[in-house]
Length: 454
Image 1: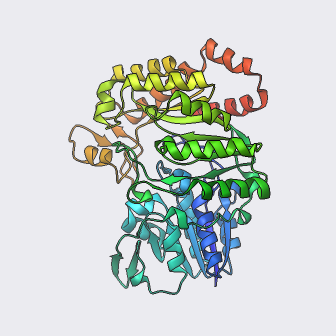
Image 2: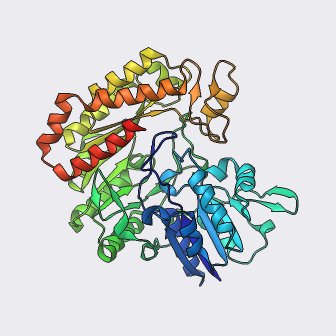
Image 3: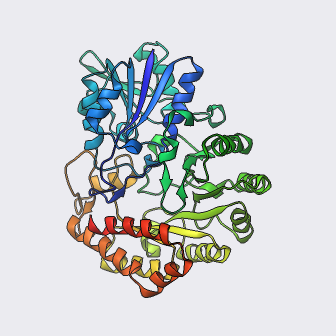
């Protein structure tokens, strides 16, 4: 049996729908899935069409001769915030359907809209949730009726099999980096020779707007020793020098982070990294250790600009905690990327102004302003669906925004103005120039232009 795993080309650097950055990042879930298939003695390849910039026709040409093709709508880095424009994915699936005997689709879109995505794609089955176990079972020869975590057609009948069991992080094989174009991955904020790792999956928080369905239930972790083995493998065999630990709340596992940092300090690799966490999950001692271990950047979701909206979206944090956490990170010398969301149903003009003023006060290295996307499978989606005073901005399976007090064009204008007001401050521009890193600054400026143009 020959199996192909595909990550489709997303075409635009910043998608117009949702103003989403289409990163060239390692499809880590496909790398785990491929490694598992290799353990089972199956011939497998990964085609990262997003990294190689291959359109549907080129993917279909490369897919000829494979018995099973799996195509993801969202690799692991997009499970939480999937693309709202699914046309590049659908066009790729339709092209491959014409040449491959069996096509399966993976990703967050199929996880929350399995029956609709089965109809839209014409796939043999939709894989719901984490793919690693289900992909191996689909390639084992077992009947579809016995495989958990899929939605499929049994004749004219659509069948939703029971959910797959959560992946045991400790049992995951070494990612199949050898099947990926590792030289293609980069992150503007860190550099080239870049990849992803993860120490845990899932999230302990319960924000109304976060899509967590693909992660399964609870927070699961792998041992530090296993994670360090993956990092060393990537550094020694693939020249990786920069990485993002893709955990949703990296420092919630404080003891493990401390252990990881101590090992990274001892190894003295030429290796820098970033992570994502909450601002109430950092402290001075931990940040100092992370900095010594090579942490250069922390992503964090601030989201709102007032206590009222923070409470309404179940963020579970106060403005005081946000400001304290940011102050500690600034003092540590680690850079920050803060995410802000405009357009919650309860947000008026005062909230929009509060967000921009808070961003200026927090003064992160990078501020990102987005319109609230009501992803199916979130509490926010259900709230909008049941509130007669607001509506989805469009009738697609994955609406772009919430319209009520403001139209979608107004919301897009607000986020664009927020970018301009934040980044064109003389104090900000001068601070960036003083750092003297002209090459990364140029690429970051180019990315900024894409955000304000869309």
